Image 1: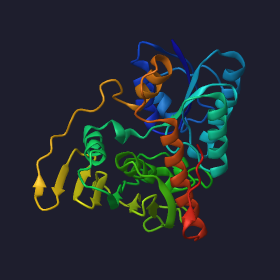
Image 2 (image 1 turned 90 degrees about the vertical axis):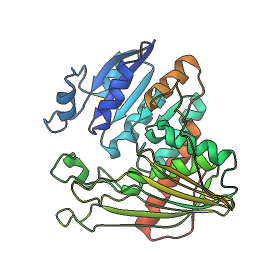
Image 3 (image 1 turned 90 degrees about the horizontal axis):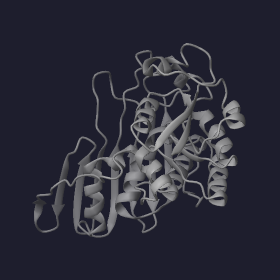
Amino acid sequence: MLKIAVVGFRHGHIMSLVRAAQQLGYVKIVAMVEEDPSDEAREYVKQMRIKLTHETFDQVLDSVPFDALITSDYFAKRGTHILKALRAGKHVHGDKPLCTSMGELREIARLAREKNLFVTTALTMRYLPVFATVRKLMRDGAIGEFCNGYSFGVHGLAYRAGRPMWFFEKGKQLGTINDLLVHGIDMVRWCSGREFTKVIAGTVGNMSLPEVPWFQDSAQAFYELDNGGKYFGDSSYLAPAKCPSDWVFDVWGTTGRLHFDSGGGLVYHKANEGPVPVKVEPGPAHAPNCVEDWASHIVRGTEPIITREDTLQATAAALTAQESAESGKRDVAIPRVV
């Protein structure tokens, strides 16, 4: 039985993470903590109709035997929880972003490696059948050598209309590239088999929210991969109200092109043939979501869809672009942290 502590209920993603854990017969949630006592901080606790067990994570560490941590606190606090758990010898599944600084990430990587702990984050698009199908196509050579690609993951902001207000407090969200673009980075990295090596340039800004001028509602990054290929990603919060958008990807190779999206759309163009019919295959049966993937690997030893290396290197690429955007530096090498 995998005993899990859940700490930090500040993002709506926590609801799906906890529900996924509760559905596993080999998992038991033994502690639930939200350290902020305010009604706003505990809104998701109220919606989920759960009972908190302790006031602080330190109390849990001191008094509750458990094996692993799930956390979805506000972004700047996640690294603190994760490092405490790792130092105590616990596995970790964090909502994304995993942490908000390269220093935290390096320490997470060091502890996880030295203590042989499984750390993953909620890169949820991996479990959608269309992305698993794209990965197989690309790994089987459908487009030849990867040359370039782009993605647009433009989100709605929902300021004062559903999004937690801590998002707009200085020092808590700490960067929209790190917040969102990690999904696009992970998809290109996973599907192509190529590694991100350099941030050519990153940029962030405020286009639509003068009430909170420091908030980055616009965020883009341009990368180079280890074969010289390029990737551009836009992960802004600029979708107007009631104008939702799927994640949309285009990738080009030496012998073909793939256009696909998180809604399940997939178009394959093959050199000298044009559009070629493609059947979207089912996703992995043993790991229908990120929590089951993580827990099953720990308990049953199943091969994870998201590895520790995937988690850490995708986060490193996102954090490097975030720092590039805020500093204005260009051509910044992405460190290996695994």
